[in-house]
Image (cartoon, rainbow, N blue to C red; front, side, top):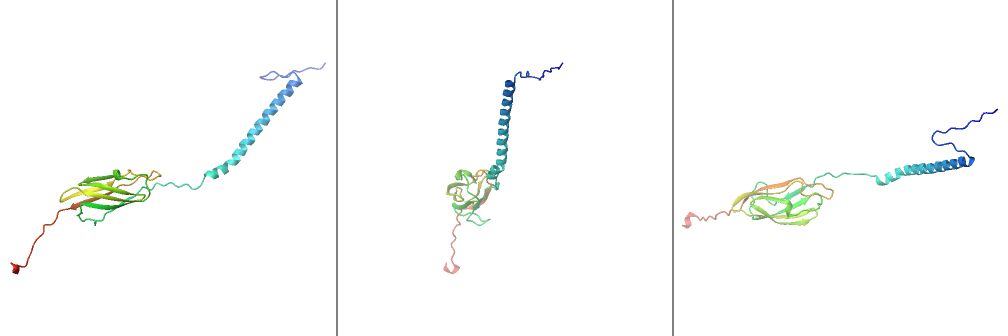
Length: 178
């Protein structure tokens, strides 16, 4: 007599009818199609990635150059200043986001009375407040101004001696005129 074997499935019970087996095969086939569609989509996206990367790539440069402040004095180096008001030319190596009289530090017997300009060129006027002789300095301290990329300035300082005393006039005449 023939022996009948019944299948055993671990987990879920084995389907008992042909209709149930067909339904499970159809469901598995649908899941396989969905999985294949997802894989195709990922592959297409991965193939497009180099084009996307190319579109956002290019030469990148980083500007880490400090803003250079140049102060031009109308008086020769080493000679005392002899005017009560001094006009300085100030230039910057690049445009900055803001630069005004509050960025200047003055020590000694002087004060900033005017600071005008725009872009990279300015005029600074300093008045001496002392009498006769003395000294003063003007400076832009480091990291007080920035360019649009965030680079700060280095320090720029000038030191001065001044002599506002007026020489006393001397009269002289030839001895024969007396």
